[in-house]
Length: 183
Image (tube, rainbow, N blue to C red; front, side, top):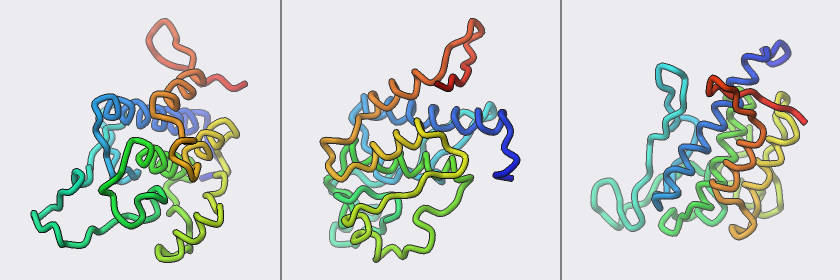
């Protein structure tokens, strides 16, 4: 399938990515930190518009009220600063996870980091390893992914900045549809 990608499929991937960043920007503006963003936590409505779901616990909260309970975390989507706990997660932590979601979209649902085991991941990330560019992803979108995976949270863009970048790729048409514009 990857070899025979259609323009419609490519546009659908781009719209998914743009829809997710719009949803995450909406949440970030309201100071909501997701803590569990992954493609599996993005649902599609009847019109195939992405809807964000599957939020993690709020800071200091666990599912059963037991503050001593260990937290189960999806490491391959977590920002380096959250690999031990999501208590101090921020919008910038969610931005890292968004980059992994984009990678999932453009790799047609492949598992992030392939055969790298979860316990090996922190060392690999510290060494600078990042997910490779998916075969069907253009340089502009992969550039956004790489920005989201900056080690320093201060260097990562906000969802508003990412949304602005991705909105520029689309040109509004009079019917309120959007068209992908490649430079």
